[in-house]
Length: 54
Image (cartoon, rainbow, N blue to C red; front, side):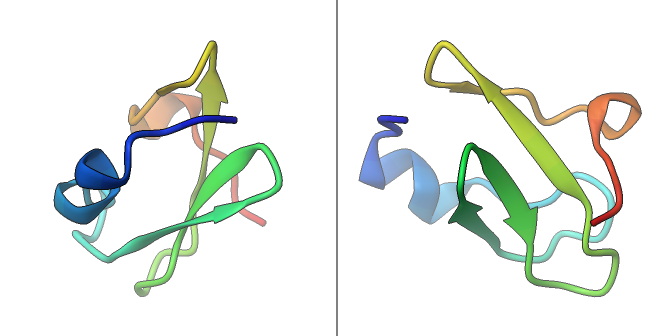
């Protein structure tokens, strides 16, 4: 997975607006909700409907 570091500085969880961290092949919210968002073809899919709870 290759996500631009500048992008990682500005994107947040769409559910709770918490910071996101790269965990494996997902972006996991470090805020209150804990949702995990998939990354497909190096593009984060930041849709709550696509997220899973870890």
